[in-house]
Image 1 (cartoon, rainbow, N blue to C red):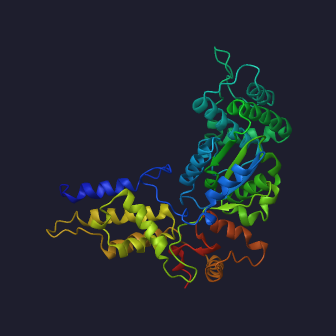
Image 2: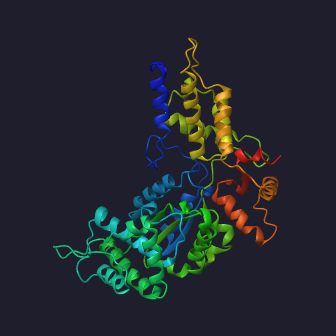
Image 3: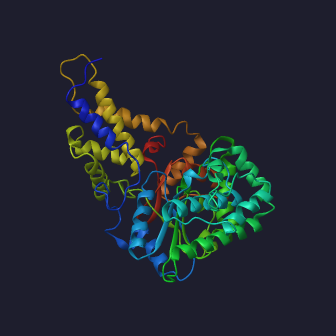
Length: 438
């Protein structure tokens, strides 16, 4: 193996900058505006207006594909709301929910309460005391034979249970909680609402005009895997449709991020949740309905790379970068993966003993990176191929009847089809899958 040369540190630096997928604050120098140039089409501004105008509690849904920037945009929403004097609690439900198992109202409410307790104590310094609604909630669980551990410390303060961590990590405990709460949901909902009312009052601190907003992030990460797949899909539909009334939390304005498959699986779901239309955060528009490149979207993708590594053109031509952007379908996560694979391919090519080592990503390396992404979607059964062809042709979900719904759900969950918003929402097949349709 050759010793590192002057290019290797640059490749590693570039690779590092696009490996960090943490959500960006709206004022981060890395942040690139995507839809703000057209306020009427910006889902985040729509959510901001609905919450800011709302008189009482409200429920909003935000959907979009995994990895397309929703968490970053929720941070922008948080900043907008805080600028109006509202208190915003942003929770990452990946820390409290097992993302590959069915969700029921009981364990979901407990996960949210655990998240709220954590935020209230650690971010706002609100520690419930003995005899408070939180203690009554923990005692209710104990009486329901759910073991939650100690609930009081030496200073007479009710401490947060580790129930959220256990629900996220322990499948057997999660199943036990679900079984024991199915016949006790009314009591759970009552106790949870009592705690929320106390927390809201403490956060408002006597300011009646102040709104308390809860942003429930990462629920779109819930996905079906293996034998549990259909039961996971069904549980999300039941939670947000059949249990909709219990998802409106007293005096709280809540934004739930939800998986894209929920929308076609539960038509008119917004009506059951208070009437606010579902907001869709789309992929970046790298193509138009007719398949032609969308230059504005491609330039946004280039700007995203430019903010992270200004000298990207040392290794990629603009044509190559645009090719990777188009191959990603406007999905930021896939785009970064492709760019990284190109850099790794170049680094590998430079390990040869030839004196004339390549300094730029070749088209052959680029093709290998795209092929690797494409292969991850295989195999595609013939019936799936026909359904995907209908979607690609119609630019709609192309359901012939409701029997096709499980297939559409699976496509959305696997990111095989993508959602765009050029004027109006439309679907298309992931560019990496289109080659299999001919």
